Length: 404
Ligand SMILES: Nc1ncnc2c1ncn2[C@@H]1O[C@H](COP(=O)(O)OP(=O)(O)OP(=O)(O)O)[C@@H](O)[C@H]1O
Ligand SMILES: [Mg+2]
Image 1 (cartoon, helix red, strand yellow):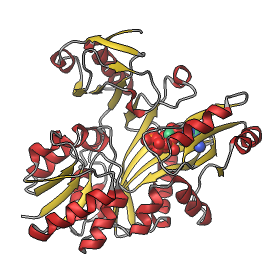
Image 2 (cartoon, rainbow, N blue to C red):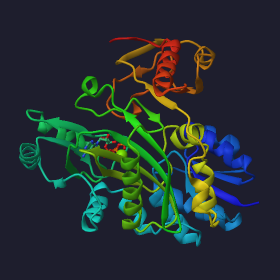
Image 3 (tube, helix red, strand yellow):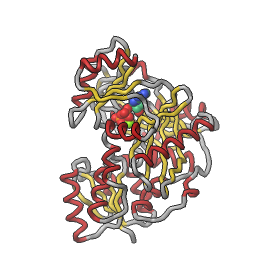
Image 4 (cartoon, rainbow, N blue to C red):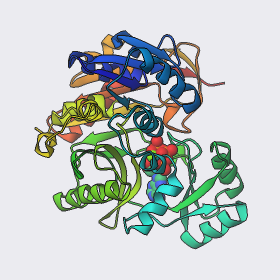
């Protein structure tokens, strides 16, 4: 039985871990939280913070010395650079450390894409508020972001007259290295992609139209409230997106593994906002993609991590089913009540529901991806019906918040 190390045992990782265990893998799960839900599927536990390489790697090394692992991957956490270092040190299959490092630094990634002619929005490093003000004047609308954070933390959309002082410090405070960058804001549909790269060829079974219904309500924060599959974009555009992701993966030096993309289609042409060398979070790879396409990229990631040679043709979508995800993003205040999950699960078309709301917990309004308290996925005969079913189900959760 192959022994696979998975970094991340959070609630969002649990369903993926359950599936990997069902495949017959002996799982070693690494997480800093002794109560991590994912440990339920682990044959072995490594207690360490996956976000701290200096803590995680020695703990894995010590484990491997007595119980050797055959492969390593991450689930529902953004640590491809730690995965790559472990694989490199232990002689396991993986992507080059240099490639992984490019994907966790937005500026370095964009520099690489720019130098190899991969389509991206105009961007630049921003040293101070004055430079940001000049950039805003030049581009009209800019996205200000930390070069090295995640989950939209520190990201804001500035339009003419916006508070550049605030935007700069908000990005800087959320950057571990204190570095800020800006990109020209490209309007247009946003798409999440997830691909598996097999022998240098990227296959993209999944594209989801991201929902930014509340862009104005949450401004200047950019908060996604869900996504719909299959994508409604024209086949020609979808083809261009898949080709762009493939070109991007090659530019990063990745010939095997998973690539998750954030794409914007501006004036009919796709641009890469970001590629990540890992599986998606947010119940996308574990729930929405398999429910909508029949493709299990979690298994694909595990098999790649164990060095198995895969066939590209096996990873195309097997069917297309309407599946919409919606996140429940409450107004700020304290949670005073909500109904039982059964009420949501029995709502029409519901495929999956998870919540992490707690009575009395303070919810801070929408600042980033962590602003939600529940997630539902629903299906329907049409996209409209799937969305309506998801919205009705969230209403059935009946969350109440008291302002303070
Ligand atoms: N140049 C751009 N043009 C249009 N929208 C953008 C641009 N840059 C970022 N965005 C929007 O802001 C979101 C967050 O930006 P980015 O992906 O750079 O940050 P992040 O911290 O990795 O967030 P996330 O985890 O949501 O991907 C993107 O997913 C996209 O919707
Ligand atoms: Mg991103």
